[in-house]
Length: 288
Image 1: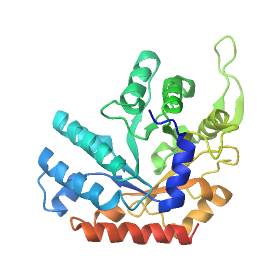
Image 2: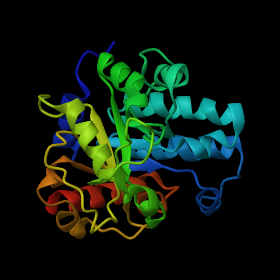
Image 3: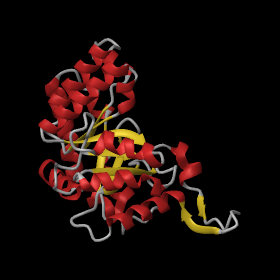
Image 4: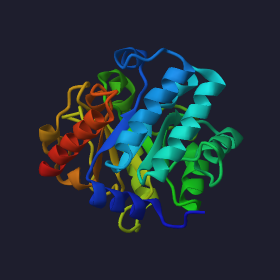
């Protein structure tokens, strides 16, 4: 079992390799652009080419589970290979699965993605807090026990989530009726709950949040979070490295920006993939 806390591991990875996570997102369009079939074999060739080219150069890779699941058991087998190959090359692997549930189901998700020795065990996972932040406790606890991390959705990279994420949180009265607004948005309540989990951790805690790099006016107070902020949206979604200081301010030092198509479009040539990642990594470092 890995007894080194995730906060140490992610801090060390960024210090060694720079602040970049590359999403391994085998979109059907990208498979076609690479001249590969939309099949489990094409998926495997795409994903392992990307991992072999990139996982030795960047702090983290982030396979998006949905693009593997669409091929059934064969696709999940490829995801297992990707996780193992990425970790073997020294990158942290963030399984982008966005799971969230209650009770024994959440415990099962935690076992699947965070328990040492599980076939799909990654270094961290993404989680959805909307069944209730406290419902994710099995994942928080298992991640801490196994030296792994989680990233909880707070303010996602597209505007579609605003109706929920920017809603003002209300406190229910004891009789079950709606109380008055607390003044906090739902997104801020997620950040604050994560901060409570990370209090006192050094160098940072293991309960990170997801805040899109595109969210220039995110309105979040991140000062007490004390954890890594996974920031998707570089490149195809519109965010640039130069904009990140303005988006995150003093919290920028905790930000792990993520790009996928911005790098993957340079495939299938491994050298072109690697060069694209190194250029973006160095650009991010220059703007840090």
